[in-house]
Amino acid sequence: MDKLSHIDETGAAHMVDVGDKAITGRIAVAEGYIKMAPATLSEIKANTLKKGDVLATARIAGIMAAKKTSDLIPLCHPLPITSVKISFDTTSDMDKILVEATVKVSGQTGVEMEALTAVSASLLTIYDMAKAVQKDMVIDGIRLLSKEGGKSGKYEAPKQ
Image 1 (cartoon, rainbow, N blue to C red):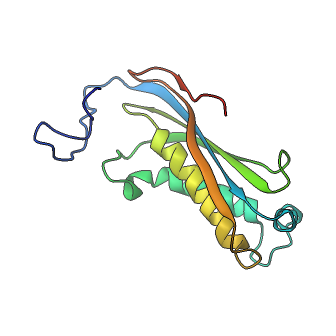
Image 2 (image 1 turned 90 degrees about the horizontal axis):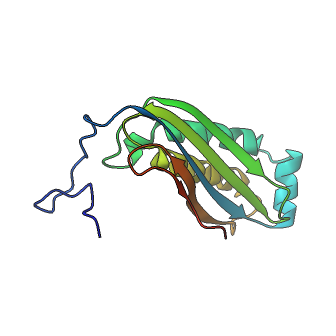
């Protein structure tokens, strides 16, 4: 197994020096879902919850979270993100909202953590806005779907 990049020769955690890496285009896509009662999903889709437009608010939360990832995750580099796209699928299951985040940057390190953080914040926002209607919703399946760019090249998660 390769050495972990965030651990130095003494075993201490440290921020990786990316200063000598080339600036390249990088993209990462992550997903996750929140499972709920069909009635709760219907209210979200109909935009009838008292807190307002759940999906619009969750989209903004995901974008903001991607931009703030280095403030939330220790050892992440602050990145000049060029694009964050958050999409919701409310059609494939009657009891789930699938969230997908695509994050792009031209930089010296990847945006996997930013995509995962965007998905997580979007899902947590959906939970927060709908918890008055249903408290037993379940957030699950948060994972990296793909990434491109950088030294390690392209990655695609196996199909589930």
